[in-house]
Amino acid sequence: MLKQRLITALALLAILLPAVGVSEAWPFALLTLALVGTAGWEWSRLNGCQPWAAIAGGSVLVAGCAWVGWSILPARVPSVVWWGVSLLWIVGGLISLKAGVAGWPNLWRPARLATGWLALGFCWLAMNEAKAQGVSFILSILVLVWMADVAAYFGGRTWGRHKLASSISPGKTREGVYVGLLAVLALTFAWLSIERALGGSASLMYLLQRHFGGVGLAAAVISLALLGVMGDLLESLVKRSAGVKDSSRLLPGHGGVLDRIDALLPVFPMALALTAW
Picture (spheres, rainbow, N blue to C red):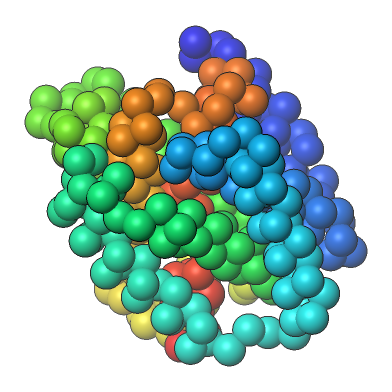
């Protein structure tokens, strides 16, 4: 399983990194639009839509994102939008996690569907705004989320004893989360050291340090990592409510697209909100 996960991850990186690196905006926009549309299809299926309705849901999401992107990009979205999205993520996420697996199906289905589609749409918009701010900026956000996820996985397997949310995601442990947060802090200060040595000044870490200082930087990256955990838990909650292990089987060893981007959904809007403050 680990070998399969690694091969799939390398294949995805081979597609993603060239799109991130090119100066033109459209390759990254089209690639992420395809990913978000696929995740929208998966979200629709998880929330009880029939096959044709799930395809329609993903297609409407793609059309809506394309229309908004054409109308707005490359202009900057007002920071108040990102703060509003982040606040909704925090409040709505905490309420949903408190309601648990049993409470999710009790919510009105159109509201559940719209919530997921909006989260995906705002994430797509945030990713493309982050791309417009530079390769270092968007890569630093992606690597922060990936580092937290990978370190939590291996930390949990090595030292995990206490379940984080056994009824939602039995595999996640508190120890894994702690290891993930420590890894994010180590990554942050290593990234800053390398950036200074190379003369760069455009990453998420640099901007957070400039805005908030060292202590504020540490608090900010920990908050972003915890938001990523929340995004992961919320998707696990929805999957458990639907009685499935993965959002789909499109990515061998990883499940579906939504399984790979769930932690990114709240992190990108919050990263833009913090750096725009």
